[in-house]
Image 1 (spheres, rainbow, N blue to C red):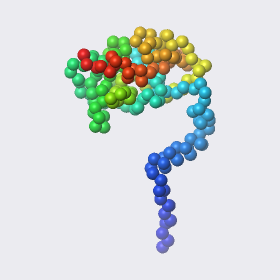
Image 2 (cartoon, rainbow, N blue to C red):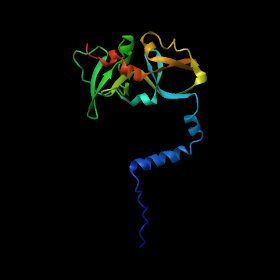
Image 3 (cartoon, rainbow, N blue to C red):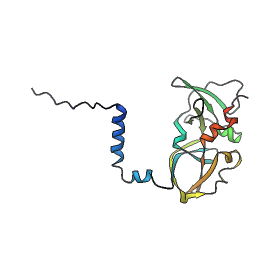
Image 4 (tube, helix red, strand yellow):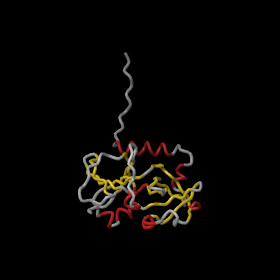
Length: 186
């Protein structure tokens, strides 16, 4: 009886194999390489906090996840919801709406958080609604003032309009460097 022929084993590292798969699959997507490198194109993760539609750069968001189980932290600011054990790492969880507007986010079963890198370790921030990926072009740019009211003004420096909706580009990196945000003790 004839033995089935075995395929030669790929001796590359798993990372190199996956990188090769990605490169080959992107080569077959019509228009994608041009879109990724298009001048004037900005892409990010879009979400809502309160009545503000915001987007943050992909390089600022480490992970998007469901709200993990929380343990409260005595003596912390009201906007500090607590800490969560995420894959063996303690992750502080902050109510972004309460930090910016002074009004508590109504938490629900499908609650999402954005994990943001900051010096000394990651931090999770609550959002009201996740919209996913959004792409904006320079021609859609508008005055950021309507989106950047109140405390948002420190973190939003540009905005775009799509279908009569304004989207502010929210700097999570600037948020993570803000002394008040970094000092969660009451």
